[in-house]
Length: 355
Image (cartoon, rainbow, N blue to C red; front, side):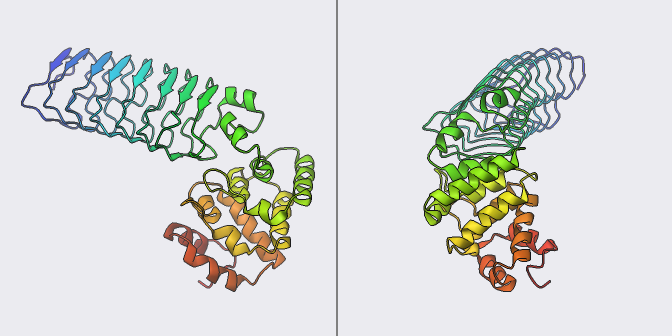
């Protein structure tokens, strides 16, 4: 394929556009599709730096990874309802893309799908979306508004999904959606609205009646003395057992939020919570390994999505303080865990199990 081609008309007989078919055709400006095309291959238009507008055919079922990677002049693209997934890096680095109409029917926006689309300002997510992948909208430096309808099917927003979206200031997300703790990492406008801990507005509202959850979420604060005082007051003035067993709209306990924080969670904070569990006569096995509403248990959450350094600190404190016999707690916990979590714990030198 000559790299100087300027216009392409896809023949009606073509159903699949091959991998890298028009890669680095830097003078390509216009592509005309016919309704027979069902798949555009990996990196098919990668690096087509002059391509400005793409209207994909209604017959299209799959946009493969890196399809329009680095199409820096692409301003507008129409995605048909027939496409189910926007795959890895599909629009990575499309820095001129001003708007994207994501149709109802798409279920997943994959890793880095719109990474560094620095001209995007508003994202409206359709009801059909179930998950938003790692760095999906990372470094979209002009993005200001992100809205998911309350009737959406979305269950999870992955780590760093919106990392470094510096101008992002308006977010609407259903209360039942699980959000990885780093999903809005380095979103400076959100920090200004919400304080040093980027607790986005819907989460603040969701935790209004869950004081221990809120304090555990804020456990990475610099002012440890004030936080520990507030925690101590909270644990002293409420029904301890009920407080520790409370769950939010997604089934998370306060321990989930403690594991959301970061490696900088202070030992004093963790000791306060662990002591409260023991004082309330709650089984540490139950506290660590129980899941609610099909959510991950705290220990699984930390291994798969959270901060494992905080989890290991918790486990080490349990061992050092001998709150319970280690072999018995391991035996009790292990049936509750998925394989990934079991392998992780077995690989750590924390004295929990025989090798």
